[in-house]
Amino acid sequence: MLTTSLTGRSVLVTGGSKGIGKGIARVFARAGAKVLIVARHLDVAEATARELAGQNGTVSATAADVTDLAAMTAAAELAVARHGGLDVLCANAGIFPTTKLEDMSPENWDEVVGTHLKGTLIAVKACLPALKKSNQGRIVVTSSITGPVTGFPGWTHYGATKAGQLGFIRTACIELAKYGITVNAVSPGNVLTEGLQGMGEDYLKTMAASIPAKRLGEVEDIGYAALFLASKEAGYITGQTIIVDGGQIVLESLEALAQA
Ligand code: NAP
Image (cartoon, rainbow, N blue to C red):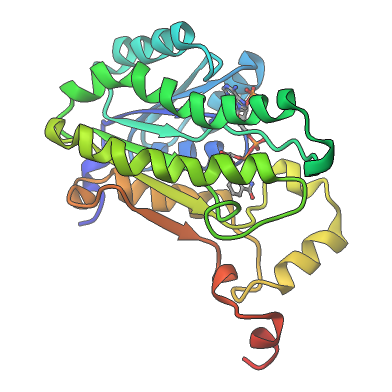
């Protein structure tokens, strides 16, 4: 049976306190994994861990910034101490500041590049010593359709980093294959997170209407894809991306939806 192999596995989810990361943590915990949530705000992360308690697995939390190697190394060591090892890193932490190109400062750029690209490198570096000791090491990066496939005003920096993460996994998977570690990505479309909920009913209705599946993604939709990539059964898949978007990017135009 698929993903039976996740029971008892040790999983670290960056950005696991909210949104998609919380969905990933919930799905892994339901599958019997031992999950450590990592985010900057400990109170929020601990509240999420409490909320997700009582699944098949366990969920706990710690505070670390993905741009801080020492803090992320401590988080990885905590996962090893609490769970007896580390098998899966879900490098998911992300931010969404919007700034149009003409107004974008180098500081705006550095914040997003630092969180998504340097943050991915640091999360991987911090977890690598423990992942190398696993007999089923898995790295799953949360990218996006925005950047690798599509664009959106205000997000030149965001899009560049999300495309950059896919470049990262293609070389990382080659370097880490000798340790039995796979490196893959999930690329969400528009997912209904707490942040998106604040955009209001009209916005959400318009978004849903432009997706063949006629709904926004749920955070668990991304969790299921990550769970598959983390499974024993996905051990021969590496350097790849699963797009989870309800068919949003395959539309040639909105007319394609109208004629369906
Ligand atoms: P979210 O709801 O805002 O959650 C972001 C998470 O990342 C929080 O747990 C946050 O906690 C953490 N975080 C942010 N900066 C961090 C840092 N420097 N160090 C450690 N943790 C940090 O965001 P989301 O929508 O779930 O997005 C998660 C990922 O999915 C991102 O990589 C994003 O690019 C990707 N994505 C999202 C969508 C979507 O529709 N939502 C679509 C495509 C891709 P703290 O603030 O406490 O640190």
